[in-house]
Length: 128
Ligand SMILES: [Zn+2]
Image 1 (cartoon, helix red, strand yellow):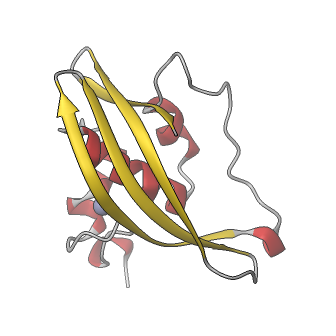
Image 2: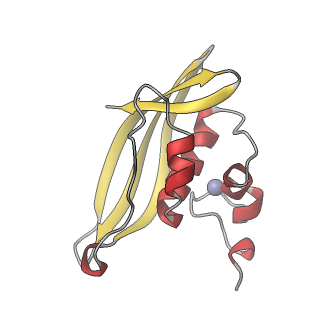
């Protein structure tokens, strides 16, 4: 089965190409929650360039390696968005991502991410 025919890894009921795939292909995410979903999917698909490009220049790491030893690979299991607030060019998203590292048990990570819109484009700033 091609990637296009599958559900998007971010959990929305849409094929990848009609969901996060559009943003990975260059379309601008219309809001912070779409950007956040597309960044989750970029971690699933190991698209380091997309993650760096959607990172705020003030907090962006110089490089990002998603390479992991085979026994320690992160398998992403799902995403739940709990809350989303936007005020002008700032937005907050609270979400839980589930993953498993190697043969370990599933881990739940709840994060509160902050986003900022610069020149019409949403960027990930930081998380707490
Ligand atoms: Zn998606």
